[in-house]
Amino acid sequence: MTIERGNFKALLEITDSTKGNLSTQLKKLNEAGLIKIDKYFQKSYPTTDYSITKKGQKSFEEFFNQLHSYK
Image (cartoon, rainbow, N blue to C red; front, side, top):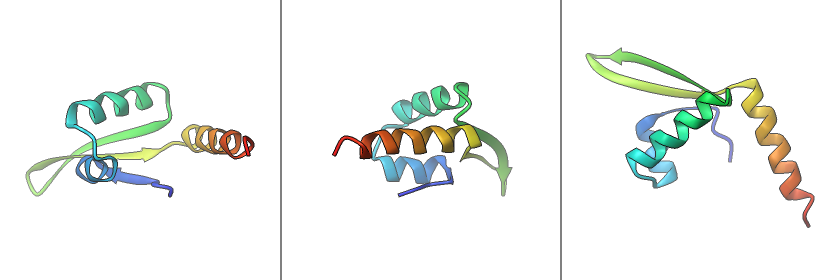
């Protein structure tokens, strides 16, 4: 499963994580340049979207290939 873009609420549901844990992990991924964070207002509500960067996509593919090679 590949998620190229998502908002905080959707990622909470997909990961079945707590808000604090997910927020911490997303911050670390952003600091590493693996994801991009976009914050804006939608109908007067704060919204945060996350998208994978080219660096993040490459890192994910390398990680997946390493896991696949353990067969």
